[in-house]
Image 1 (cartoon, rainbow, N blue to C red):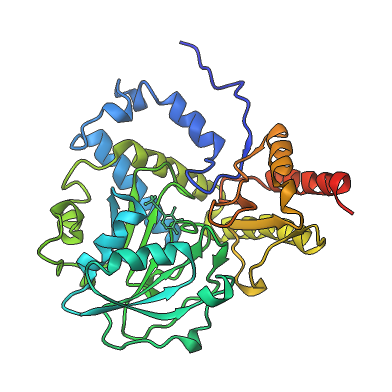
Image 2 (tube, rainbow, N blue to C red):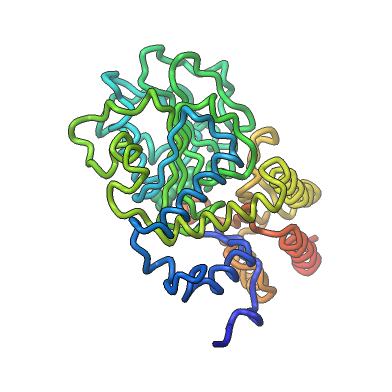
Length: 368
Ligand SMILES: *Cc1c(COP(=O)(O)O)cnc(C)c1O
């Protein structure tokens, strides 16, 4: 048998998601593709009821609980349907007889959650940075919270706008719910401050196809009668996320990524590296007027850095030159334009250094 991965030519991939994964994880998956640990099967071919797969999923959950410090009073669920699916599934499960949900609106992903929740509940936008072009997180003191709301929903990192919470808002007795899709497992989080955390895996912890939900036990068990059984947290919690067939291969890869994260020193070490990467890019953006990032300093994202050229007509040349250097997926979201560099866990510091070098070169050739 021959392996084909040893000479792979890899680019620096700044994709916002699905995103770059640790090369060692991809190599291990390739090695185990045909015969997982002497089972004679690929993980893709295993029954989810078999002892091999059950061990794989249990290991992924154990690592996740250890790395993030998930208290025993929280359920960890591996579901399908993406974070966008959760925009409906969370209200169905968490309304619990309440009429309304409070939302903080910090950008495109907040708006998607708001729009979907309106199908199931009264929605109150308690604070919004829309009037400022979504360039900051509204200060907690300005949120007009309803003490009777089912929960308060935030998006901890706006993947498109590049705005991130660098504080955990206090919502009193009302549970805090966070869409953490694009900063999940990128830094330590005090899970007990949240009622529920959800995230698609495809930014920081694996491939597309699995959605991770971490939910406080006492919030589970009062889903609306219309809730599909496969999306009823209680049903899935009681079945260890195997009420229906879970996305087995995606969960296996998540397990490998989590093991890699552990080897990196855990979340504090990963956060330190993420800060170093982001600082390198922001420092350069702030050192020149040729490029700029519009986000308030205190709320800048460590994960997604949107930036623009002073002269937008150079965008295409910038992106083409980047591609030629193996710096790919830097095009900004269509709603924002310009560029966006996503700096997820698996992106190495050397990728950011290469990007900054290229930006300097490009400016020298086209700038002032
Ligand atoms: C990527 C992303 C989503 C969408 O996730 P899907 O898996 O496509 O449903 C939702 N919210 C945020 C913050 C994201 O970054």
